[in-house]
Structure formats: structure tokens, C-alpha cells
Amino acid sequence: MALDTLSRREKIIEILCMTGSVRVECLSQQFGVSCVTIRNDLRYLEKKGCALRSYGGAMLNQQFVFDRPLRDKGHINRDVKLRIAAKAAEYVRDGQALIIDSGSTTSLMAPHLQARRNLVVMTSALNIAYELAGYEQLDVMVLGGSVRRNSYSLYSPAAEQQLRNYRFNTLFLGVDGFDLQAGITTPHAGEASLNRAMCEVAHEIIAVADASKFGRKSFCLIRPAAGIQRLITDSRIPDDYRQALTNMGVEVIIAGD
Image (cartoon, rainbow, N blue to C red; front, side, top):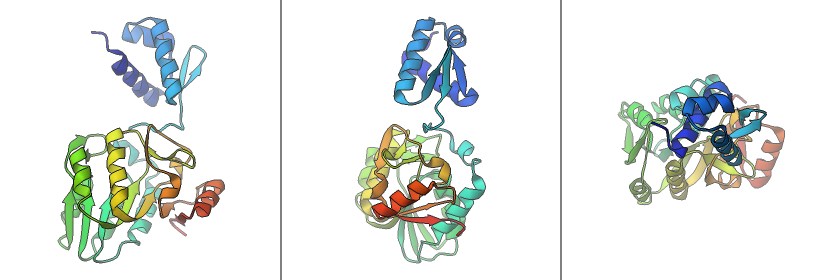
């Protein structure tokens, strides 16, 4: 049975992510639709920023953030992410109340919190909650809702309301895209809404992001670039980003320095 327009375009994005490029004729044959229909699909994806049109097809826009599975993202720049996570944990003090967002870098913070005492940690990430639950000196709170299988995380309007009943010292915010103009973005609208609620109830927001995230953007805004207090990243951060963020009042911390 032929796919509807939305499903077909999602499949085209999957193919782009896997192969890096597509051809109109091949997609036409694969989906059983006309070349005109495929060209319309590629035109739509180009408008959304997902693809770059080329003669006879399209290429993946490497600057666009796609919703990739956490298990895949975890292998990318892992050594750098380990250093960033360790540095982030240095900003945790005994007795604090924290929010730890889902993500491939934030999930690496958990082992570094084992020696902390009297922490309260709220998270939307099932994998993070599972690991922290083994530390007797930590109180772990899990936000409820629908499961995002790509990120092992939960989201819902009820979770946002639950958050607003509390106040936290620090939010450690995972980052999919970080652009000076577009701000901090993510591909998933439900997660973006939950992240915005997290920002509302945290006294301090610390974004954790390796330098591959800079200059990338996606559909859903979480926070303007100037709306955080600290950014923990690596030494590959572009000089113009570092200077611009410093001018905005954001403290830029380089893991490994």
C-alpha cells in the first residue's frame, strides 16, 4: 500500500540520514509515485532545511539536527562527551536539587554523582533514572508521560505541570542544536516544551554540548543562546561563538582545561 505524504517524507529523511543523498528516479520507483511528486517532496524538505537540492535528487543538510536514536548519538565524539560530563559533575554540590535532561552527554554524568550526598535529582530520562536509582544517597524523581524511544525519555503536559510544583538549583540541559541566532533547538516538539518548563524552575541552567552541535538548528526552540548561565563544551568551539556567548554573559567552560 502506498504511503501517505507525511510517512513518505519521513522515509525519505531516513534514507538521507543513512546514505547522504537520494535520486528522484530511485525514490519514484521505491514509493510507486511520480517523479513530480518526489520533486515536490524534496522541495518541501529543502524548505524545512532537511535537504539540499542537487541535479536529479538531493543531499542531506549536515547542519540540520535530526532525531537520531540515543544509542547512535552515544558513539559520536564519546571521548569528548565523557570529559564534558565529568566537568559538568564538578558543578554539583552535596544537598542540591537538580534536573538532568535526557541526552548522550547528560547520561554520562551519572557515574560522577555516586559520591555526592543528599542530592535530589529529577529527570525525564529512563536510562539516567535507572542508573541513579542504584545510588542510595540520592533521591531520584522521574517525570511521567509518553516514551520517546529514540532518547529513552518521557514527555507530557502532565510532566510539565509536575515540574512547576518544584524549584531546583541547577538544570543540566542536553543540546541537539546550538546556533547564536536560532538558539538551542531540538527536533521534538514535546521534548522542547518539557525543556522550556525545566528552564522555568531552575535557578541556573548549564548547557552541555560538544562542539559538533554549534551552527546546527532544528524545528523546536528550547531557549535563546543568551538564556543560559553556563555552557560546558570542548576546545573546538569556534572563536566567534565563544566571544559572542561571553559578550551575552554566558560563562563558557572548556572541558579538559
